[in-house]
Image (cartoon, rainbow, N blue to C red; front, side, top):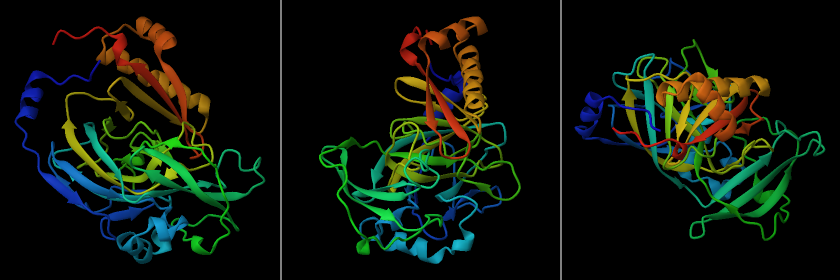
Length: 359
């Protein structure tokens, strides 16, 4: 199953000669903690263009000696704490896509994601799902990435004194009480973006913390290299931004964070005017994934179900009855995250269950 281009649009796509744009993360090309339609574009592109961008983790201060270079330190130094709100994530952009209008879809092909350094941080945070059960203690674990094996292992951990509540906190970890953590344990590295999306059609700033129909903090580890996301455009130019880079995360993001680590991200954008979808839609080489969001996990589950029903009926031409039956026997539902205020559910349908299209 694939979202179909009409023949004219497909022919036009073959004619595209994309321009490669570089978008470094600097105090002038990032915005900290928010999406907004009022932000001046950091870059303007055409449909089909390719962007090489830097995505910076707001957790670089958890181990500044390992996770900060001069350019990252400049962002932390020059963007005042008063301008880091109402969310927490450093967002690179926005990118203005020529011709994008509300009602269009922005198709984003994520081509490559490479860690900026060999290190990342996981915080067991005060917003984590088991904060009370863990004695209301916040703890940082620093991980090292092995590029050869594509695995990560813990270097050390430390308990954070007080409350970790300032976006971009620098914890002076070189002076902290380091403890051994997870001896002998290795986890697979799967770089992805925790937060990316278009500007919502809302006056003022919208927090990067909750996910929504614009995208935002979806925290689905499958949004990595080789995946394609479709975002519903809500304002002229789309105003697309990326941030909250991770190198590994499990479904649920239980402690409140993933392995947070800066990434260099290459992606290609296409403007789609030939189909509509109400929520962020993920395509991987072997499946389609629909997302549902709500503060109530049961409502998020229903929202994901309704949108998957729409995908199966409109893109695979199934009847509603057949689509409903198929969802029950072949679709896998999972909890994307439970720590961002708005809960996330994702539902996956394998593309291999459908017969090949004649076209």
